[in-house]
Length: 503
Image (tube, rainbow, N blue to C red; front, side, top):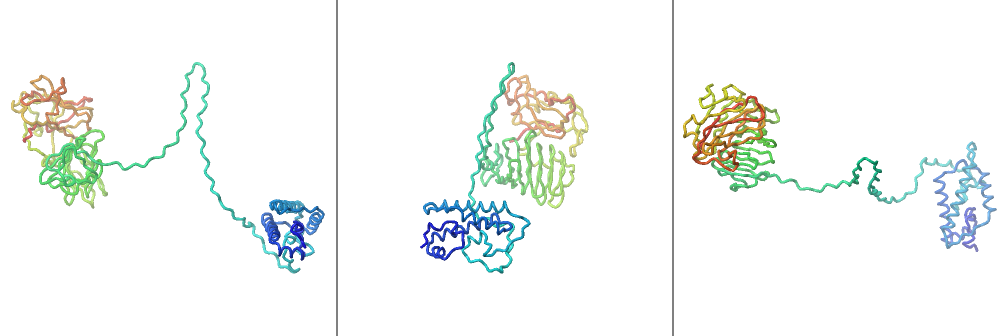
C-alpha cells in the first residue's frame, strides 16, 4: 500500500498509476496537494504562456527530473513543498524560454509527446484527433486582489532655515519666521443689519409700536407715519420725513423701500454717506443730497439739492437740483424737467417757520446790506435765475437791517444753498456784540460742482475763543459771513435766510 511520503512532486508529475489514483481517492491531503500543483501550473501558464512546444526539450527535462534524487517533503511544513514546486516549475519555464526555436513548427500534443500541462493533469489524454486549440486572450485576466486603503503621507514639519554667517561690518539679517499653516475659516453668522434712530418726531411707528429715541430699525422692519407728519433722524445725521400714512421698509444698511406714500430724504454730504430708495418703478441712489420721492401708481422724484440717479431695467437718468422726473415700470425714467422744487416739497417743513430775512436775488440786484459779491446767473438750478457769486466768501452787514431781525429770540436757524467748484471746507460765522467775537459752524466735507443745502440752528454755533460757549437769548448779531477755504475761485450762494421756528 502506497504511503503519503511516497507521493513526491516527481511522482505526482508523472502519469498517475492505478496505485497513485487509488491513494489520491482515499487521501484528501494528497489529493489537495495534486490539485494545488495543477492550479500552480495553470497560473504559471497564464502569467507566462509557453512558446513553441519542443518534444525533444520535454524529454530532456523529464530525463533530468527522473535522474535527480527524490526529495521527501514533510507534512509538518506544507510551505516547503510549495516553494520547491514553484522553483522547479520556474526552472522549467526559464529553460523553455532560453532554448526555444522561433522558426520551429508547433507539434501536436500526444501521449508519446507529453507536455508539462499533461504531466501534471491526472485526466486521461485527449484522443489523437484533437480540435484546434482556442485562441488565448491577449491580456489574460489577473487574479482579483482586495484593495487596502493607504493613509496619505504626513506633511513634513517646516524646518527653519539655517542663518548664513554675517559678514563683518554689515547688519545681521532679520530671522526668518517659519511659515505657519493656514487657519481654516470658521463658520460665521450673517451680520445683523439695522439702523439706529437717534431722534423721532411726530408719531412714527416701527413694528406697530411708537418709535423712541435710540430705537433700532431692524432689516425688513416697516416704518410707518400715523395721521400726521413724522420724522426720524438716523445716527449719521440722515433725516427722513414721512407724509401721513407713508411706509418705508429697511432692506439693507443703505437701502429703503417705499411701497406707498411720500418721503423727503436729507442725506448730509460727506465721505461714505450713501442712501438708495427703491420703489416698484425705479431705484433712486444718492451720496449726499435732498430729494423727495412720491409713490402712487408711478414714482415722482423731485431734487432740491445735490444730484440723484434714477434707474430701472429700461434705463437711467441723472437729476440735478431744481429738477424732477417720472418713472414707471414699463418705461425708462423720463428726462429731467425744471420744476419749483422748494414749492413742491414745502410739505416737508416739520415745524411752522417765520422768516427773519431771505435773499434769493431773483430781481437781478444786490440788496444794500451785502458788502461783497455780485449777482450772476450762476450754475443752473431748475427755475432759478440768479444767485450771489463770492470770491470765495460773502458778507452781510446785519447792523444795517432792523434790530428786531438780528436779535436772538426763540429758536433760530440759518439756511442757504451753495455751489462750490472746488475747496475743502466751508464755514459760517455770526458776530455777537455781547462777546465781541464770532460764533462759527463748519462743514468739513464739501460736495463739488452741484448745488447743496446748508442748514443749522444757532444752537450748533460755537465761540471761536471758547468752544463751549453758546449764543444766548437776547444776543445781538451784527454781521453774517460765509467763506470757503482751499480755493480762490468763485463760489455761488442762493436762498440765504434766517428763520424762526414757531412752537
